[in-house]
Length: 273
Image (cartoon, rainbow, N blue to C red; front, top):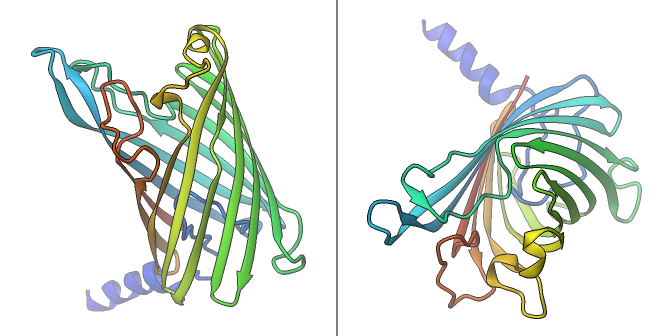
């Protein structure tokens, strides 16, 4: 029994360091991709304290908005990676009304990520990312330009992100969601960093267009978040977590129907096969 336990622990914690593709920054993608033929499972969890109206009392109450994404990453070729997602967003409609919708909804995503050159070949590593989403309320197209520069153990990364969202009710919207961060490798198994993101919605047509006038509402953004990020890498298994504080409109108290809580948490767990 002891031998079996030792072997299992070695496989789980010690193997496959080079093959795994951990995310040290939960919100910001780096340009690294899985080697061809490798497969990795990743679980995303987003948690945001929000407010909703209790259906029984009609009073606003603090609730926890959540979103869960399961991704399968596949290395297709040198510097080319496929990602397939399943997204689940729990609903609190039976208990609360006027609860903000999370950025995604129940559905599927497919994406490709490609790095234009081997790491370090250019002064700045450059990658591109294209994604399509189909869920219960929309079809979404997303493009991402990924930039990265290494300075020994320090890595700085930035993503320029834009989304075009076509809702089934006829509304059209452009969302800007850039990110940036830096991470430092204290040891190969322990990384610390600072991560940040911004989100802003710009209605192009439909009911929301009236809201996006000369004076933008809090719910349309732009809103900015920043906070620490930590990653533990055990080889085939890795875990990263980030805690983000809203640094824009810090005195604003979130109202029922608004997405941008004072804090935002994201956890990511990955396992390489």
